[in-house]
Length: 145
Image: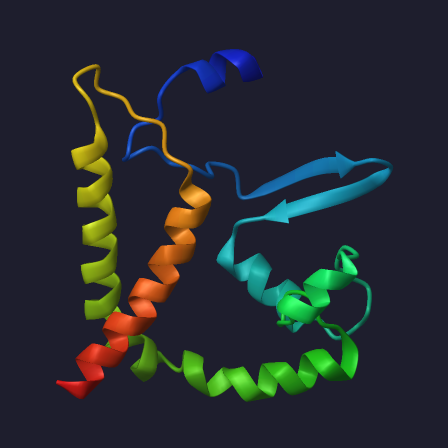
């Protein structure tokens, strides 16, 4: 299927957005490996050999967003140690109600946007950014109750 043909058809809300687990692409003369398999992502983020090089970022991004996906070496190890406790199974399990509430609200909002023609175009980038904040704030509410 051509890119134009793919973009011309609306995507179902149940559509599998990332059907491929590993994808290779190029930006200018640099290869980019896009990984969507959790086991490989864990392996890449835990790599300390220096063989896996993260892509260079715009310098302004460093001021606004420094995390395990962008840091390397000692800075990466320090940040990883700091955030690891937040990802313990018990803490993540406790966030399930917040995830369910926020995701259900998002899907309901999207479904109510679908018009008579059965399709609606949505810019999902801000939607997912808002979803993250929504999950965080509703999780804080759950903890207070």
